Image (cartoon, rainbow, N blue to C red; front, top):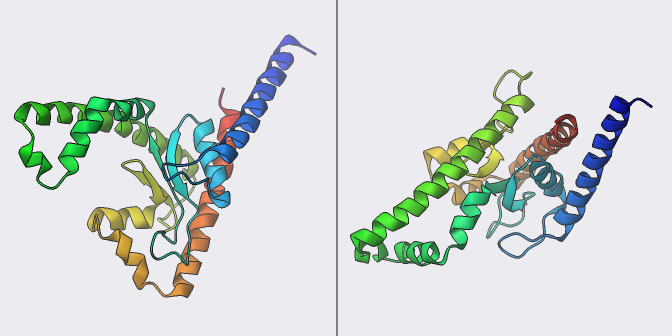
Length: 213
């Protein structure tokens, strides 16, 4: 065996070991709500992690959970820097204060500026992750024409079906109630389409991971 082929084989072996490690890791982790990762969304979460993204929450999508679920799969991502900033006790205090009723009005100008500096760092870092993921989605859809509603998009760390992201941008804050108007059969149909698209994306992410040097 030539040195080049040996090195290629070693690289593939290292990739496979890392992929296996990620599978075990995803099986063990919980999201911010302390819940495990849904079975049907695990491949996407693992694929994103393999391609250098840090996920925070996810869901495979559900039809019978009007109280706390959506009939479409989703994943949220954030940058490592953003995660570190959010662990900062000072930021945590300022952010909690700002979120209280009249909290912002009661904050000093100095505290407002300090909070904004933290937020600027978070937004810039997460914005870079969004752009990086959008480039990967462009790779995924490069040979496809049209604009199918089940196509995947990313906005502000939310990886959702593009149809829902566009709706979110138009009526931000009200999307939680939108799906409640859909008949159950429509929910099932949409969820199946969305899940199939996320499955295809997961396969692409895996292939990309093993292809990239």
